[in-house]
Every structure is written in C-alpha cells, then in structure tokens.
Length: 579
Image (cartoon, rainbow, N blue to C red; front, side):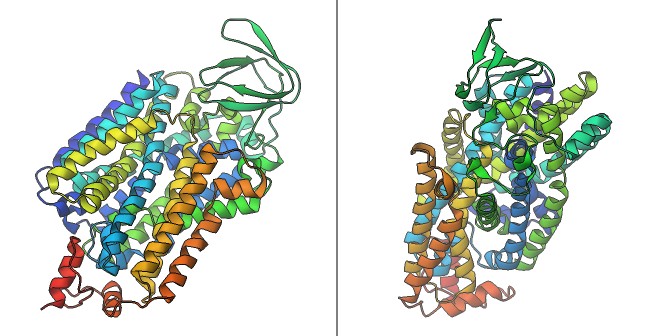
C-alpha cells in the first residue's frame, strides 16, 4: 500500500508531463535537444534532476553505512566535476552546434570512424549507469511494499520509455526539472524530521560512533543479495523454520532470500569488503575500498573517476546542447553546482542515523535501502508510514529522472549515430533500448549500484574526458590520435571492469586498481591521444574549428572542417565554408 501510494503519483505525473512534449516534437532536433531553447534556470534544474540518480538519493547514504565516513568523497567528486565542466567544456560544447557527443567528435575531426566509436562508448556508459537505476527501483519497492523485484524494474522501464517516446528531450526537461524540486523537498524534509524525532541518545551515538560489535536487541536480518560474513566467534541464530543454527568461526555465505535472527547480545559478524560499523576504519575520512588496505589510493581512485567522469557523461553533455548559446550553457553549469551543493549536504544525515538505527542493513547487503528504511524505525505509526512513502516517491523520481536522460542518449547513439534514421526510428529505438536495459537489470540485484555507477564514471573519464579536453583546448589533436586514445581508454577500463566482475579475486593495491582503474586508465588515454597526434599532422582547418569553439557565437561567420558527413553540425560547417 505504501509503495503504491508513493510510486503511482510520480509515474502518473511523469507520463502527463511527457504528453506535453508531443505537440512540439516534429524533428530530430526537437527530440534530442528540445530545439535548443531551454533557459539556464530550467536547464540547471533539469541537469540536477537528471544527475541526482539512485546513486545520489540512496547510494551515498548506503555507501556511508557500508564503507564509512569516507563515502562522502563521492558527492565531492560529483560536484567538483561540474566545476571542471563549467571551466573546460560547457560553452565550447554548445558552440560546436552538435546534437550528441559522437556528433561533436565528427564535427571536430571529420572522422566517421570516431563518431561510430564514440557511439559505442555511449552505449557502454549508458548501460553501466542505466542498469543500476532500474535495479534499485526494484529493490526499493521490494523493501517498502514487499513486491517482487521485477515489478519495480518493469514499472521504471515502462514509465521512462513511454515518456521519452511521446515527448523526447522537451518532455524529459520538464520531468527532470519537476523531479529535482520534488527530490530536494522529499529528501530534506524527512532528514530534518528524523533529526528532530530521534532521541538525544541516538543523536549522540550518530555523531560519536562506537564500533558495532554486539546486537543491542534481537535483530532479524533478511539478505537481499549473497553476502559473505566473517564469523569471529561461535554464534547461535534462529532460522525461518523456528529452529536454531550454530555459526562456527570462519567465513559463511548468506544466500539471497535467507533470513537469520540474531539474539540480543550476539556478536556481530563482519562483512567481507566493508568497514566494521563505527570502528576506526569506518570513522576514517578516507575510502578503504573492498578492505584493500590502501585508503588514500582508494579515495583518489574515486575522486578521479567521479570528477573527470562527470565531464564525460553523455547524458549530461547533451543537456548543454539544449541551451540557446555558449553563455547560457556556462550559466547552466554554474547554477547546477549550487543546486547540487544544497542537496549533498544531507546524505550524511541518513548515513550516520542508518548506522545507529538500522545496522542490520550492513549485514544484509541492502544498504541502498537505508534512506527508506529509517522512518519506520523512528515512528511505527502514521508519521513513519508517511515519510517512508515520501522518501520512496523521491527515490523513484530519482530513478526516472536519470533514466530519462540515459535512455535518450543510448537511443540517440543507436538511431542517430550508428544507424541514422528519422523521428520514427528514434521513438522505436527508445522502446527497444528500454526492453534491453530491463532484461539486463533483472539479474543485477546482487550487484552494488554505487559500484556500477562508479564504473560508468570510470569509462567516461577514460574516453570522453580526454577527447573533449584535448579536442576543445589542443589544436594539434588528430583523428588518429583521438581514435587511438578513446579505444585505449575504452578497452583498458571496460577490460578491467570485466575482470573485476568475472575474474578471480585479487587483493591488495593491484586488486584495487582492477576494480577502480581510473588512476591508470585516464592517464593512459590522455598519453596515447597525445603521442599518436604528435606523430601526425592536424588538418589545415583545425585552427578555424578551434576558433568556432571558443569565440562567442556570431552565426554564419566561423568556418571549420570542409567535410560534410551525415552529422548535422558538420554539414552546416561545410556549407558555411563553401560560401
């Protein structure tokens, strides 16, 4: 009942706003960039709504419960990425006249091969980022309403695909702007209520953490995913059938769907890869990822991935193409930094309260649900149910807003860059891509949403970040250098991620750099791009192309590449040169 009350209005409003974009959508430009008429304030709200995904609304607090205070470096990297984007990318990207990132790549270097490669990168990033949105939607509805996991996944996929197919980018803009305001209110108000509602002892425990070693009360733990527990001393637990079971010291894998009841005073097992709740490692303001023992390296790995990856996220970059001009794009980025800064003041509140009030989520592997689990722990009456519903609605708004942008760029990569077609093909591709992502999300419940999203940032940082920075600020970049660098970044980052998923477990700093490869894949991509470009010669029109990116817009005056491929931006540039 709570789940239906929370989710139905959000889905209904999303669909109704999607209908608003139908009448205004007649061309590919209308579908992909809303005819470039979105104001900076509306656009910044839409960017913020799109960017505040499941990883932000739920994931940061969940990572804080799992990994400790150091998880607050994630929002630092997210927000810092927009500052870098403001300085280096926003205005030049809009001045390029492109519709998509692959469109920009071909417009800058006149290489259809680079365009196709960039489209493949968009698909990889979109998949890594979109699957955890649908996955967390399924988990949240399961935790709040007891529905099967697949129900939330299918609802999210259906709502997003129908909205986009109907209204394109214009509908997505209004939906995301509305949902940012909704998420901000539904995140801040419950946080303030929780702080006021919990007792003085809980508030003290939240800001003065002590290691969680023994259960303070009888605690049932329902495992949402497979979790490896490290039992330090013999522990007796009660099982679902009412019997008891002795857990001997050593490692034990709790299977998804299993439920164990720990008695009051029973020792708390450790979770492999997580920091003990409230202990010295948990309190340290650095990230010791997977217990590798290299917190400083882990922190830098996350910061490099999130900050540089933000500059390369295709669904965020496409937002700047909706601005009327470069100055509006820069203002959009500046306002976005302020909006995100306000939101990211509050995930830490949920994280420290979650450690005190719902420590069992640390064991069950369901830390992503800590935000929606807190109100019922504070108040089991109507107030707790109301705030649970509000947070569930906000979480679902986060899934939908981010998924809209991601599904749009994935569809654009297929139907505009790889297999170009008209508006009808774009709409059909939206539905096809949504089905594919839902099918990928169904078996992904056991994967960590924060880890998947970080991997998406890593691929973006290793491919599009060097392409954009050098393509915008270095006139000697060549098509061969760009292709080589993007390919090196894509293969190294995705290969490392595949090894982390399917290969043998590797410990120490080597294992850390396999699971979080940004510290070496980003320099590799930049280096390859620079070396290969220096061995070649830039095209004769590269200086004119650079001027177009950096001078204020004066239509019909700045020529660039003489090529005229299917890219709308390149065709326009070619026509200007021939006048």
